[in-house]
Image 1 (cartoon, rainbow, N blue to C red):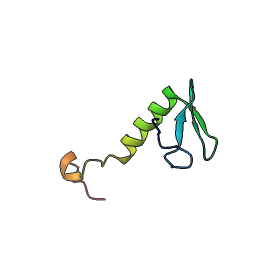
Image 2: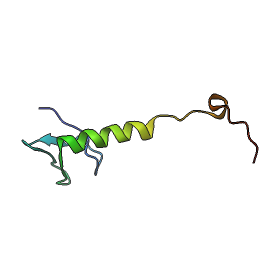
Image 3: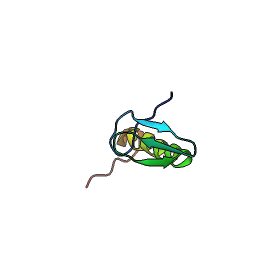
Image 4: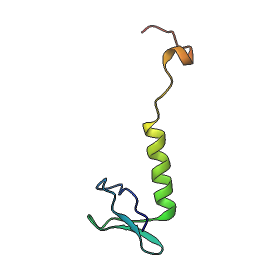
Length: 61
């Protein structure tokens, strides 16, 4: 059975239950569409941003 990481408790405990994924640990429930959006947002947040040398921002404060 495929499992996903729960956005609430961060455990590998989300299991598909039809229209929803449900966490067996904290009882969190999320739709597949919302889970995909949440995972995409997490990837963007964890991606390193450009450095000043890459952006050309050499302004001093």
